[in-house]
Amino acid sequence: MTDDEDWRTEQWLEDRYWGDGMTLQEMADEVGCSISTVTRWMDHYGIERRPPGYKGAPADDVLDDLVRVSRELGNAPTRAEYRDLGNHTPQTAARKFGTWAEARTIANAEAFYGGGRLVETPVAGDR
Image 1 (cartoon, rainbow, N blue to C red):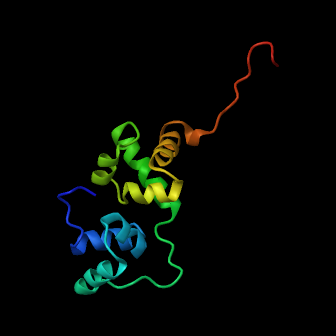
Image 2 (image 1 turned 120 degrees about the horizontal axis):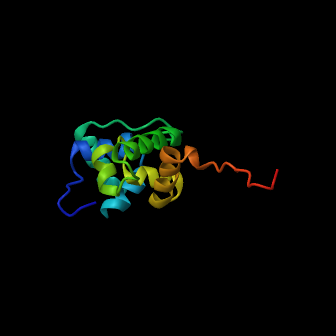
Image 3 (image 1 turned 180 degrees about the vertical axis):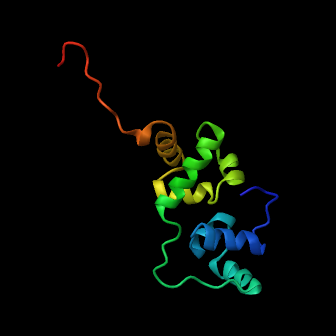
């Protein structure tokens, strides 16, 4: 989070909680406050809590979005580019695929190399 970004806005809270599927603990850790502080701000705006067992955006949806943005740009997006053009956040992609770098690698392979599947080409004399 940038220094000038105020996390206490309805938009920020809804984006992280509903859009990214972050837990209250993850949100609190990101901004350096307690869960009760995040909860109070969510209550202030009337943001509903998720039902038990909610898992957030499916990994396939996040990957499809990363691939779309990669194709639009002609390469794997930076964090800033993905924040501007993507439907999720780099943090969501990192949670779904282990790290942001791994998410970019997978999306790049899918967008430009057929999903990263290697196709063996016979070499002359190997037939």
